[in-house]
Image 1 (cartoon, helix red, strand yellow):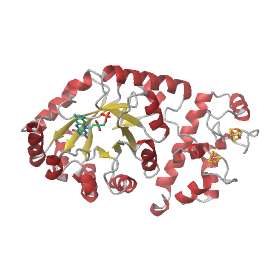
Image 2 (cartoon, rainbow, N blue to C red):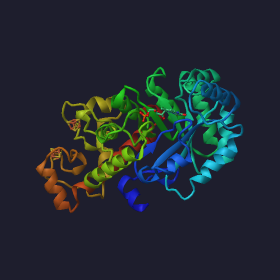
Image 3 (cartoon, protein in one colour):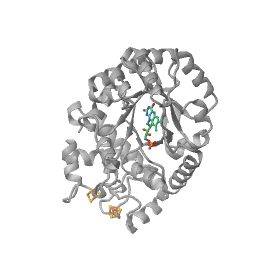
Length: 378
Ligand SMILES: Cc1cc2nc3c(=O)[nH]c(=O)nc-3n(C[C@H](O)[C@H](O)[C@H](O)COP(=O)(O)O)c2cc1C
Ligand code: SF4
Ligand code: SF4
C-alpha cells in the first residue's frame, strides 16, 4: 500500500486509500458482496443506506412497498457486523451510509461496530417517507440537528462523513462550514447539476476531505472535479467494473505523469484557494489580491507563509525565476523556460515539482484554517 500512498497521499480512517475512486451507496444494492466484486478498482466504498432506527426502518418499509429496493432488517446491528466481517482482508476503506432520526441512533451503531469503518450520515435521501420520519434530506432543512448528530458521533471517536445534496440547504457553503466545525471529517456531495463551480465554493469554505458525486463516469468529468477541489470522486449508478477500472487506470496514469492528481487550476484560470501555491508575489492587479482580501490574509503574511513553507526545500531556490524562488512559480502546465531550467538545475523532475507544490499548498491551507484566529479564516 506504500506505493498507493506515495502516489495519491490519501488516508481515510487511518487507512491508505489505494485510488481516489469510491462507490456511493444505493439502498438495496450496495453491500459487502457488491463492493468485493469491484474492490480491485476502488479505494473507498459506502455500503447501504441502512435504516438504523424504528422511524427510518418504517420509512424504508413504506418505500419498499412503493417498489424501491431497500435493505430491510429488524435488527440492524448483527447485519452490519456481518457486512463488516465480509469485508475483512479487503484493502478498500469501508464506510456505512445510515439513515436515522436521532443522534443517539447513530452513536449506538458506532459504539457497537467500532472505529474500523467510516460512519456516513445520509442527509441526502429525498424520499417522502424518509424525510417525514426526520432523516435524509430533513437534515438539510435542519442543519443544527445535523451538526448535533455529527458532534455526537465524533464523541464516539469515529470518522464521520456527511452525504449531502447540493442546492437543498439555504447555503451550501455555510452548511459545509457548520459541519466542519461540528467535527465532520468528510463531505460527500451529490452536486446534481451545479457542477464543479459549487464544489469550488465548498472547497473554499472548509478544509475537510471532499468527495464529489453525480454522473462522474468519465475521466474528463473526474479531472474537472479534481481541479476544483475534490479529493475523491464517487459513483453509484455506473459503479460497474468496466467504468471503475477505466477511471482507476486513467487517474493512475495521469498521476504518474503529473505528480499531483488533484492539482488545482491556477487562481486566474478559476482555481480554488489551493492554487495559492502557484501564485506570484502580490505585485499586480489580478485575482490574487481579492482572494487574499476575502480570506483576510495580509500581503506580508502571504509572503511570509510561502517563504517559511519552502525554506530548506528544493522550492526555495530559483534566482533566475520572476520572483527569485520557485515558491512563486506557476503550475507545470503553464509553459516557462526559466522555471523548467531551474527545476532541472535543482535536480528534481517536473513531477517532483508538483508534489512539492502540493505540500506547499497543504501548508498554506493549514495556515488559513488552523494557524490563525477562528474569525480570521474565510
Ligand atoms: C437506487 C439508488 C439508491 C440510492 N440509495 C442511497 C442511499 O441509501 N443513501 C445515499 O446517501 N444515497 C443513495 N443514493 C444516491 C447515490 O449514492 C448517488 O448520490 C446518486 O445516485 C448520484 O450519483 P451517480 O450519478 O454516480 O449515480 C441512491 C441512488 C440510487 C440510484
Ligand atoms: S498571482 Fe499570478 S497565478 Fe495568481 S492569480 Fe495572479 S497572475 Fe494568476
Ligand atoms: S519564472 Fe515562469 S513559472 Fe516562474 S513565476 Fe515566472 S513565468 Fe511563472
